[in-house]
Length: 304
Image (cartoon, rainbow, N blue to C red; front, side, top):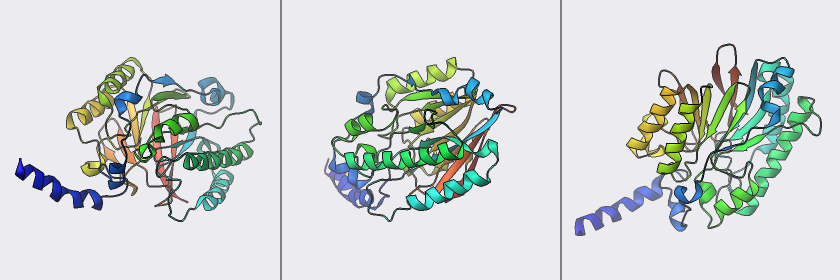
């Protein structure tokens, strides 16, 4: 027992040395985070009309794109770059061809730096500006949708009321859901505590097995992280079940945040894992393009 105590004491410096977004980030020790089992109830359908097959078909598109960001950490003391991103986005819309112009945005977690209400409100102001730019550049009407989806991250849970604020303020007001983009289906899983928990994992496996469509999976914690396991889901049994389900059931890509620095993809044969760099700390975003003619999803990481 004495030896175990000294091992735990010796481990404390490592905890504090890890990245602020790491699995055992020291900041999280200050809060009693909500557990995933208490958050999870079901996967809900959060598809929007603008991305349904008939809507994209009416535009003459069988190839279309979205934009991904990760780890914007609103509330961080780091110098922010939203104005630079807005100008970059305007220019991108002006120069990209029709199939590359984003029709939705997903934030892959750590929307907030410490789960405070004002940090979520700041993100919503950012999302409103992105929607304004997209609607102008895509010539959308005031009633047309440009959806901004979100994934729950570990920093979003750091405040005692982090989860409460998240589900009240951040669209689509849940952490486990799926949505349709043309003939593709996106599944968003809750890895805010570094685990799906057994109930969510079982339902995730069942949903994938019952759905023949080509798919993408969205998560904050990487599943494998290219082998850098300090950033990944640590339970090897859970990790292997997720990867097996993806391999068996037509998943084309997994998109992830958390690590901040972008990784080259990990190729699992039938699908790939991509870690998107931090929007705040690395000034990265990604364009994903869905091609109905090939049932493929391609990924391009960009600096802004």
